Image 1: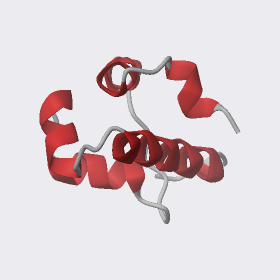
Image 2: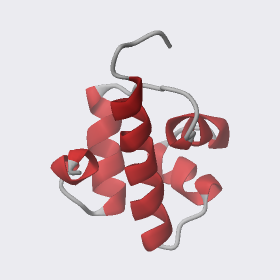
Image 3: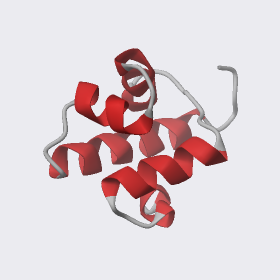
Image 4: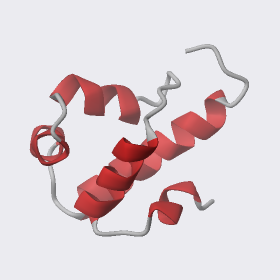
Length: 75
């Protein structure tokens, strides 16, 4: 993905990874709860590439992680 916000996408993905691990979820289990594939979650969490998600997916991620969506954007 070509974007001028690459670092923000990567920070978002690392936040997803942090909260996923905090909840004790593997990428596979988390993907199942999201209704997505394991590779989709791996793309979100990749520390080397920007990968955006839809608002629908954003809210689903927050719901599965049991956090406000805003937590995924905090520094």
